Every structure is written in structure tokens, then in C-alpha cells.
Length: 370
Image 1 (cartoon, rainbow, N blue to C red):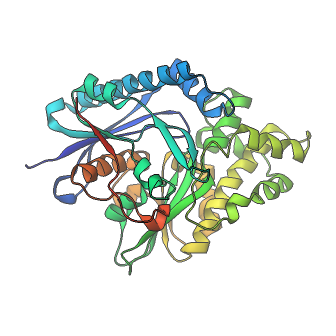
Image 2: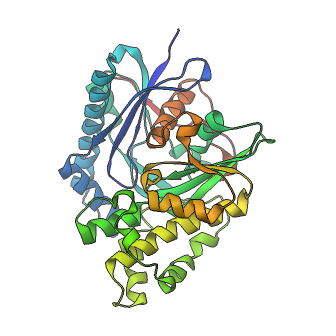
Image 3: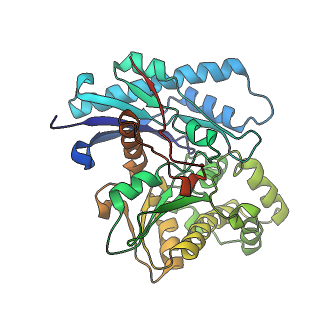
């Protein structure tokens, strides 16, 4: 077979869109064929946001409806991707679909991580085999179930000449450490990436996000608020560790903002949240890879204020985006799940116990045929 094309789907904690990519994985190389950003239908986005933020009682009817509706939305994203790429379903080996995380509780007893997005609906609507449910096997072996992209980062971005750090600035930020002289890959969630920034922009501007950090650039960092947030115990935890909107959410932010006093402007809070993400990412990198070259990906790589602050905090380390390594920053995660889907089909372990804390490597994902 001259080509092995898989589709990767990723919808992250920011709930901004479904990232869909078609990737040629022939001979273990990774070539991005085409990529799209498929906007969530507004009704579905609100359904998902409500499910994620309801911590006491979730309506099972709403959960079931969202599960099916998301499967259909994923299918629509795939159909648009195929049309634009001039591909047919028969050209595709499989779809790797992360699903939408509704709850991530790796430290509860028992631990669990729940993603929705009906694989049967997606497979039936597209006529393509689907691999999903990537986290459960890792959690069953005592792992966090996340982050899962470091294995992919290690495969495509490792250098034998320089240490590298890949920073995914999604709703939650995570880092992957790639040592030039070791085959081991490590990584963990550093804390909030865009999730609090997007929430605060929506709440105060009615905008889904603060494009390029332009609003935050007009604010002043509230040092007392920043120090209070930085004192959260999560930032001092030793890895393996992972987190999500279950923890860094509007209630978490409101507690800190209220404690800081009502005199602070909304734009100053946004500036402080930008500094929080930059500071926690930079602190994590300095602790584990102070000499590594740093490459940013994820939606936050488009926030110029955030990237400027990370760059300044890490000087003299080199900071660029993964575009320098061959994959545009917006599409790295979706490519990772196409790659993880192929690992499942090849019966190859996809987790990294050094990252997740699982007791051993394990094959990740469930296969659903159309």
C-alpha cells in the first residue's frame, strides 16, 4: 500500500471547534494532507458546556442526546474534510476520535475519565471504522489517562541533537519533554491554558476568546491575584499529573477574583490570567528541561501576548511553534489521534507509563466498524 490515510478528530476543553485532519502515515512518516476547523453547532456547544460545568446533577436525557448529537457533528466534520481533500471513505483506514471530555477525575476513587461522542453513529454515518475511548485502558492500569499526545510528540519531534519541549496550549496546557540522549519521553499537564481566558472573555466581552491577547494587552497584571492563584496546590504536585475544566473552572476563578477584591477591572483579570498560563508553563519547563528548545502548539500558540510572555520567561531558551518542525500548531493534537488510531489497529501500545503513571504500556482504544 503506497499510502495509509487516517483521520484524526479532536475537540478540546475550549469547546471552540472540532479539529479534523487527514494524515498520510505511510512508512511511519506523518504527512498532513488536509485539515479543517468545524465549528460546533451552537446548540450542541451549549449542551456540552452545561454538561461539563454541572457538577452535582447531570440530566441523563441531556447526556444521551449530546452523545448522539456529537457523533453526528463529528460525522459532518469528516464529510466536509473528505470533500475538501477530494477523498472517499474507501481511501481512509480509520478515524481516530478522542471524543469530548465531560469528566476527568484521575484522582477519585475509583478514578475515571469520561468522553462522549457516539462511535457507532460516527462509523455508520461515514462508512469508516472508528477508534475511540483512548483513555480507559490506561486508567484501568492506574494511570491518569492523560496526557496522551506525548507518545506522538516523541515519534515525530524527537531530535538526537537537542533537547526539546513541546507545549500544547489547549484549554488545559501540557508539556512533553524529549531528551536528545534518551529514548524515554515524559510530560504532564501544567494547568490552565486557554480555558479560563476564554471563559473570562466570553463573560465580559461576549466573545469566544481574546484574539491574539489584544484585550489582555490593555490590562495590568494584579500581582496579588496572580500570587493567590499560583499558590494552588496543583502547581506544586509532582508528575504524573493531569487536570481539566472539572478543576480549573469558573468557580475556581470566581473564588480567587472575589478574594482579590471588587476594585480590579475585568481587563486586568484577563491580563493576570494570561500571566498565570505563561508563568505556570514556563515554571514547569524550567524545572524539567531548562536547556531544551521549546515548540508551541494548540490554539494558545495564536495568542501573541501569551507566546511573548512565555518567550520572555524562558530566555535564553529558543521558543518557536511546531510549524518549524513540520506540523502547524493548530493540527498537532488531531494528528496525534490519527496516529494513536493506527497504533490500535496495529496492536501497538499507545500510552507512556512515565507520563500517565500506568503500571505498564497498554494498547489504547476501542474499534467500531461501520
